[in-house]
Length: 414
Image 1 (cartoon, rainbow, N blue to C red):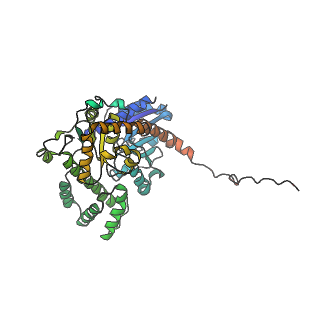
Image 2: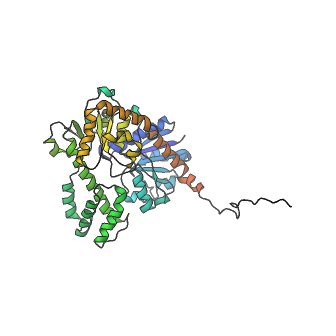
Image 3: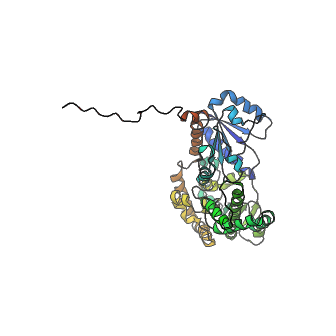
């Protein structure tokens, strides 16, 4: 088994990245790997990295969303190249965010994505290292979630999502973007309504061309538009879904919901909550509402986590869920408010049926879509394709002449 080092920090919202990585570390430990958690903010980090060098041939690194990816030596050499330790960078966000990280070329760095949609963008438009890998977050071991049996749940739904205000975003961009780019952005936003991120590059390039601006996906101007389009469309969906959920017994976790709190009578607005506290409480809820981040080929980690906790996932349907989670179709919704309300009411009107469908889905999806399988795939990819192992995959010389030509059978003399 490998020595697997997890690079963590506390600089993500609600410590969610650190929380997910610590669950992944526990899964790796159960698989028999020797796991070391390295805090990027700890003063002893350089010494702990140096201590790994004698074991470099058995060591791999995992980081998330590029946190810890750009570690350099004193002479500005990438640490992973100098140490010859391969690293898997497991990305949650679209590559257009912090795109420099996704362009980092190194035989010792694997660019991986929890959403295959993002890996496709990286392959098509960034071409870094000639490969991008997708590995779902997956369903953690149910033992990571506490909670009572299904019949003793609290009967409420949790919605862990901070609100973004589209009007504030628009005002900010109107003040900071050149007028032509602002016009392109909002024409693209209108064309992108109801579509996922795989459609965004063509939409942006087509709309920009109508304004006589010709963009290359992955370029700086293109990314300036794409990141804002992604933010705005997700903000609009968050507000739309939140407006429906506020009419039901829903606990909102996160900030920015003050205007909803003033008018809602059944919902509760509990403010921010650290990742670990939310994980520990997830199993006490009947349902968990979430939104996929404009993707079609996987689902948000909160859907996988809800399944692990035995909590009914309520989420926007996509191609992945229709194919792999069909029993949850009654509790998933489309782009309209009526379908959101119907999904929520299907859970509240018949909790037993919703919980039974969730339990059956869990039995069918686990371990095929388990986090344990995902981290094992990460280990296999990193040890077999990156670094020295990757170099061995490349033929150093062409095959000798005729090696692929089948020998001709001899014909007996008449």
